[in-house]
Length: 80
Image (cartoon, rainbow, N blue to C red; front, side, top):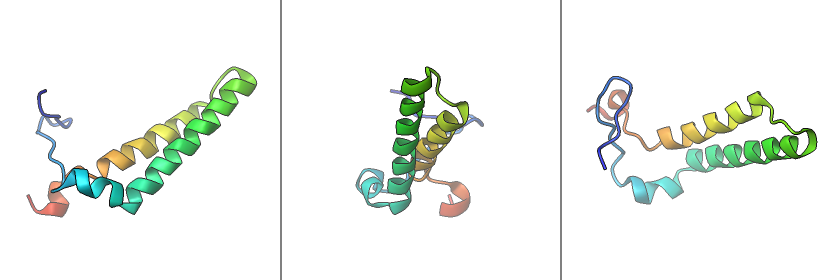
């Protein structure tokens, strides 16, 4: 599998020990909880009205993106 790349075409690096750190980071837990809550809300809207609110779906995807971004090494923060 080729390495992931950012929009500038640079390879994406994860923080050291990302696999062991990921479940311990509270910001990741809260972001995933928000994504799950948004998914439940979108599912309930879909069941009740037949359509899911675009704002709810966007909020869920944003929360999921925040959880993933938390373990990506950021050069301005890590000094690389």
